Length: 242
Image (cartoon, rainbow, N blue to C red):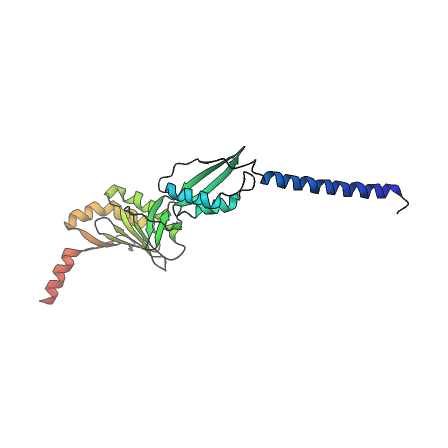
């Protein structure tokens, strides 16, 4: 091979090309790390409602390090998403020295027992909130389904002017609601929509016939529902004790 100039020239050219690319890459890496490409500006593209400015500034000081090219966007995104009220963070470079940050905040829908909050997407998160919210009680993994059903329950109860303040799901997937005013509805595990619709259609008539406030309604019947009136239950208890 040593007496054949063509292969030797090809090898030499290849080695020269590799060396040239290595030098070019090293020069590029050195250039982008130079302070001539600083990150000059961080622009918040969404106006926060629940996220505090101090929280955003703390993440910026901690995680926005490096030049325009070397800043670790994955680390910065993770830092912003560690803020309790941030659901998702989107970061984009904008030449020549600007970083644009867009934060999507959680919108609270309910409380998850006493352990956290549930957002509109049915995701559980932890943040401080002192506003009035309904309470969801259920097994692990049920929050998304409960968020969907809550929207249906709320819309279905509007004709009778009632609002669910507590939604419960047992480990066996049996549903119950507590409404504003104290009325509890037992829906069971099956045919929830039809059972609730039947109750709503007959609620006003049942309330007029009873003439008293209902505190419990069992909707797990094929053609109707059973109600309990606290006043009548107490009166019956007194009669039995005599």
